[in-house]
Length: 134
Image 1: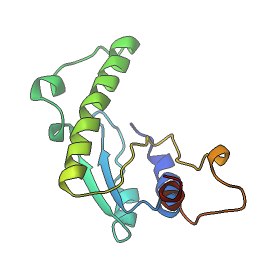
Image 2: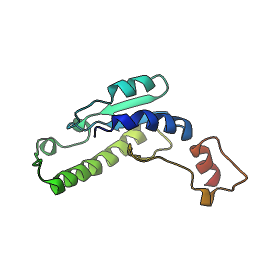
Image 3: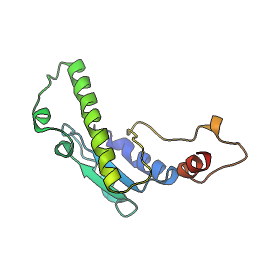
Image 4: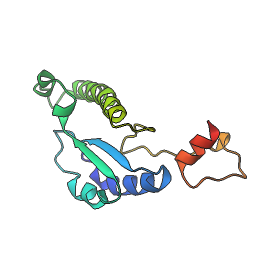
């Protein structure tokens, strides 16, 4: 939530490294800022599917309030939101016939594990490295 300042680098990195060409993003309804401007810049390079809470959360969950002074309650609600998003997203991607998928938060970056890649062989993308290995 409100990590849009990281999004530009995250998209560019994964566009070239994975290569990321299809993205499902869930924007937190409590966000004060929108990722729209950043995402709009990438829509010619990839498919971007934007979800709000109504795409994957039950209505009663969306209306449940957590006190601002309750950090544990806020954390638990965040984790419950993720637990609802992941399976809904994976089902959506399966119906869209996507062959490879990964779940990566905005503060995480996919990279090759050098312990499992032969050092004399390099791959242009992470997906090619995974395919060659497995």
